[in-house]
Image (cartoon, rainbow, N blue to C red; front, side):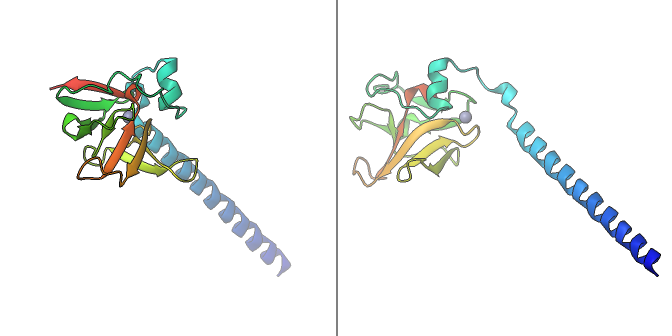
Length: 159
Ligand SMILES: [Zn+2]
């Protein structure tokens, strides 16, 4: 009787350890899939200055970005992964020294809580690169929303 009990216990333990191994393998596989879906090999190589803003969430000095006063018609894309983020139609003069947009293209921009705990950070919906911050109820346009974006996070493509 005791032998049977031990045998059963060993079998149960074996089963448990097997199923655990299997679930760990599945998790690893999912993580691998998630990473490969990003296909980072197609991302543009960033300069140290671009990396400071896009990867390390830095902020360019106000009034220095190359798109602050750009009024040409076209699309602003993510500097790193080329996802179209903003149109020239949504760009407006805020006088803040950073390119300002009252809307973004489709669901291509993601709003997340900033590490500072009170602002809302905006990132590229595809590669999660840092773009800037979003502010509300300032009365600039009818949409009452200002996406304050670092020029260096963007690439402008004229229409
Ligand atoms: Zn991107």
